[in-house]
Amino acid sequence: MFKLWENLRKVNFALAAISLCVFAGVGSGPSSLCAESTQTGSDLVRPLGQRQLLLGRDFSPTIIGTINAHPKVKQPRIIGQSEWGGEETTASMKPHTPTRITIHHEGSPKPLTPDQDPKKLLQNLQKWGRRERGWPDLPYHFLVDLDGNIYAGRNPQFVGDTNTNYDPTGHLLISVMGNYEIQAPNEKQLNAISELVAWLCDYYNIPPETVRCHQEYVPTTLCPGKYLAPYVLSGFFEGEVRKRIREAYVGQTKQ
Image 1 (cartoon, one colour):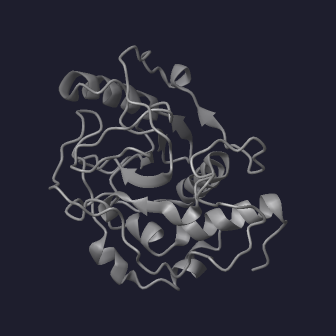
Image 2: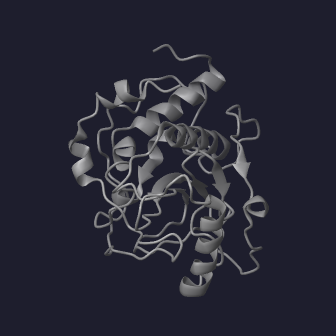
């Protein structure tokens, strides 16, 4: 269980002032509010990044993006497309090598509520993307709902899509369902994101410091929202990922 609020008191919540959002609809589909950027992610100091931890494994440049033949971080439960009612993808997609992880939100017009069916929302997003954007599949590789359930989106072997002007080649895109300009992520979601990212970093040999949020590549976007972005910008997710990797390879991290 996270010592969530204790950790967050260490973060200057002025970060929230630069946290931002992009999409205007899950059921009807996203709409971009973003302009072009040439940034490739900031080198912001991340006070909760836990970069002093010895992880018990290597993330050297020569192995980044390769598959770890013997990963030790446990894969979290991921709900496959056939389980949530996704339609089979037959269109061709651009292959890529995952080398970094980027956190998004969907930015629905209203907060995501427990009475909404995440599976139906995913079906609507997939249909909307194909109809309105010509996307072959969901734009994201993974999505997380209010209960911390993780859903499979686009196959990670292929480049995701975006309504903004940045090249997502090499990025594994994780979207948190809802609008985090107007709602706060809960502990189940934060835990699910941390577990998913830790597994992805271990499996694809992706260094934890590459975990960024959408606005770090496109400064004019609000994504992933002022209530979610600080968890990335402060290094909270990076730190939780490092602790999970260390625990898998070395043992329990002392607090």
